[in-house]
Image (cartoon, rainbow, N blue to C red; front, top):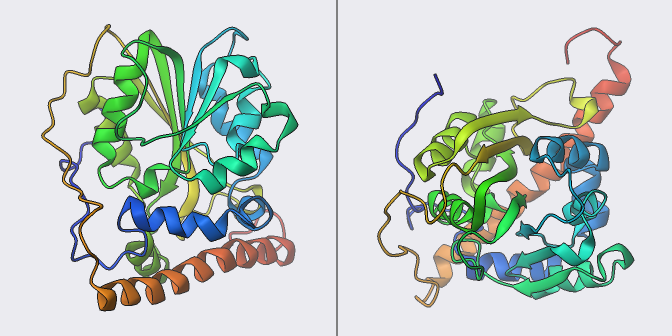
Length: 289
């Protein structure tokens, strides 16, 4: 029996998250895109982790149609095009600054690269053989809506592979996760997939090798969740209109608070993998860290 959780909901406006709306995420990546591949990936999203996380997606045919949602700088796409012809891959992201980095990568020159919203995908129903999204769900105001869209755009028998963070249990890591962005629990991923209509839902844990399986601090890339679309057409799940209004003015003081807390949280999560790497170097192999 798959574990269950409560219904998905948009993030309450009262929560002091740094990345609260898509508009704020846009500006966040306006600056982060400059150093993303050199600072974020080495600590949280290595090539080994990427290949391990993509393995359950069954990218077993070079002619597959694949959409990489929230593809950013194309780091995950580089793993996809090892198995699928680049001309059959579409990279979608809301950040033109991240996509500009993807366009510079030689292996991705033949990919289709477009701006778009993960919760309102510009693809027809029953379009793709595979849906991949890595490191994007943490910015979605309503994860259930995004996963419902993944179901819609897949063909009958198509598979979705969503890679994202996991919620920490250590109190300090949990505090910074709560004020920064969305860190779902593992059972929430499974619940969202099943509610959207996916079958054969599986969750695979991933992480940097130097963590030695330690997950109490949470992982920005912590699990790979897959599900198969069992019937053609849209998801059987019915949702109302989007709750988020990105055009609504933001209170400057509220934004300043989110900015300060978010900057602290981002700094903390840059330091955590360094701390774990150092422990891995110091503590003898076979002993817990």
